[in-house]
Amino acid sequence: MAQTYKQIQKQIEQLQRQAEALRNSEVKGVIDRIKVAIAHYGLTAAQLGLGKNKTVAQPKKATNASGKSAAKFSDGNGNAWSGRGPRPQWFRDALTAGRSIDEFRVGSGKKSKPDSVETVSGETVAPAARPARKKAKRAAKVRYKDAAGNSWSGFGPKPGWLKAALDAGKSLEDLAR
Image 1 (cartoon, rainbow, N blue to C red):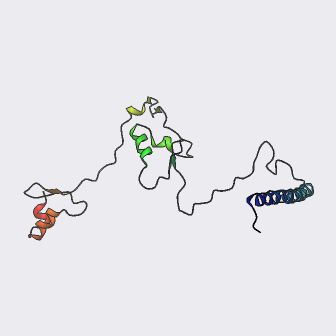
Image 2 (image 1 turned 90 degrees about the vertical axis):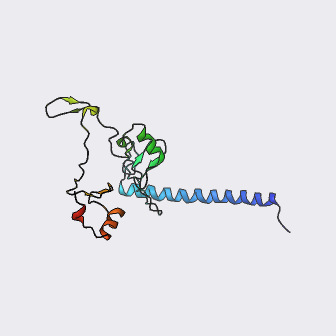
Image 3 (image 1 turned 60 degrees about the vertical axis):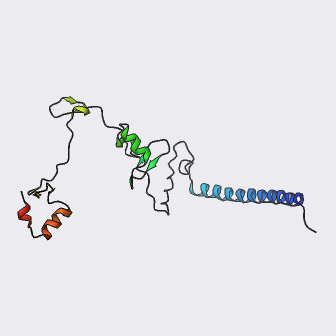
């Protein structure tokens, strides 16, 4: 004879009560063994991490199997970016709005730049008054030009017009200006 739904539910409840009773007896046994070990080694609550100053080492975070890096930038609203790949839209929007990259760094302890900096002469200079540092560009020693006004600095791949001129028999010296 097939069992009814109600009969199966009763069996489930009975099995859950049995499981809870078994668990309670196992927990009691574990607690008793722990108490014996604590008494044997003279352990304190602080050593077990149970006191006010918990000094239990936190478990290390496992690296993701997907290979994702830990977040290096976060806005505190749940958005995070590892610093790899293209910048996410929330990050670009915040930078466009005038926020600093340093404001989003995770774990750096530095959230923003100071409002002023004292110089060697003892004067305090506001950030806007500081001259912007630009990366120096390499200057081309020679500039190659043709009669049509095309030019090439000598850096990077040769442009099509230069390749065509060289194939036509001209030399780089002929095009140097």
